[in-house]
Length: 523
Image 1: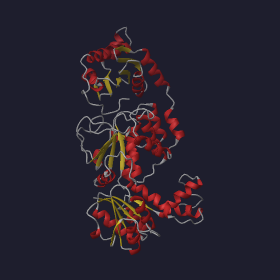
Image 2 (image 1 turned 90 degrees about the vertical axis):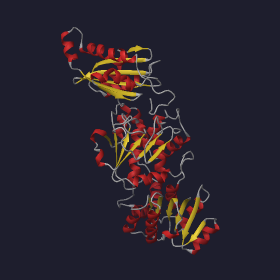
Image 3 (image 1 turned 180 degrees about the vertical axis):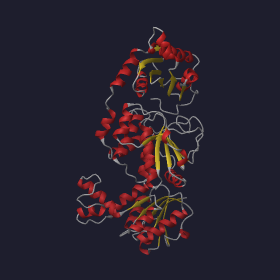
Image 4 (image 1 turned 120 degrees about the vertical axis):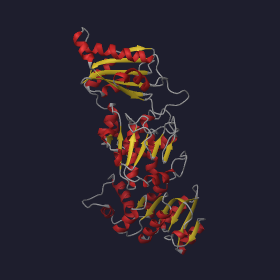
């Protein structure tokens, strides 16, 4: 199979041919310019001297196509022909010189990456002036930046650097060099907008990955939204969403019928640790956790050797030449750091590479604020009560914290109790507005927290979750009336009722399937 196809040639195309001809996979060039044909052949590039706009001259298959003549009109024709011939290929198109807005729009309609020579030099100028992507002076647009540099024309090096982003070979450990092209092909085939679904109670890796994948879809004209189920409970996670202005919607505000496709990030099966109906059709799956069952999807990229899904998303952004904005870069970097415990756990070389690339775009001061958020007095009170009232039996700790004002504090307290020596399962519960709420966590345990809560409390309320994270809700109902007629306080009545059912269910608690790694992070 032809890995790279060069259509048309120019100084830019010639330089790219020189830089990429030694890479894995065949490089074929098609140009009707005799001079460039001779130059390319002298460099041992397989060259066909023919019309690059005529698909009859094209090879049977190509993974990456680069349109690179200086003639904007011919580039439009070549890009259209290439897209028709290779609908699944990654198409990078150079505008050429003096392209009109109409030509720019025509190329953008079919290409995955459009390289504008004026914008290429603009980036260099802004970098030199320390403007971080802003255009200097009062005038707007890339032309103004070029004027600020004294009318500088784009050099071949400027444009080569920008085009190469679309040709990057990516990390060596990527298992399939064709995945970027296949991801784009899957997104293009959608009949409507894409819904990117993070797992329930999303962590920073899931949050950042969801937003990053929407950015990939939007780069090729596919509208996309990101959503989550459950809660964003941790102070750090809420700080991340608020400080970085992350547009993540609760799944109960989403109408699935409005979307033409679904993508899962940081988990791999619909209805398993997300709020989709079980077995709901899925188009894209990107994850780093080993699946515990069959994974369905038109495009699936699961790499357990990598420490974070954010690493995979950062890789795709790089492969497609998409520079993440400051908020997205900061989010992805934070996602990698959290899932790898600052590169001390299950870390691959790809994680280091992705983090190094993201660091150039990230806002370190915002990252510090995310990592050190203010803690509400209610959260501190609930945590103190959870520690003081804990009932530890073996490796399981349960704690009633009484009346609460913020149910999110329960999840944080359950997480914190896991830091107790010898404790692998925690359950913290309290009540507000006539309902008992509970949150369970497990780490390195053979107990399934979701099944444990279902056994204990589903018959009297609603409960569920998965092996490492679960929740429950039980109406107070008659318990409130009992406390009024007895000497016990309501907190004592609630504790007697809930703890009794919880520890009774613990005796017959189901375990996770033996020999299978956890599908989702347990911390």
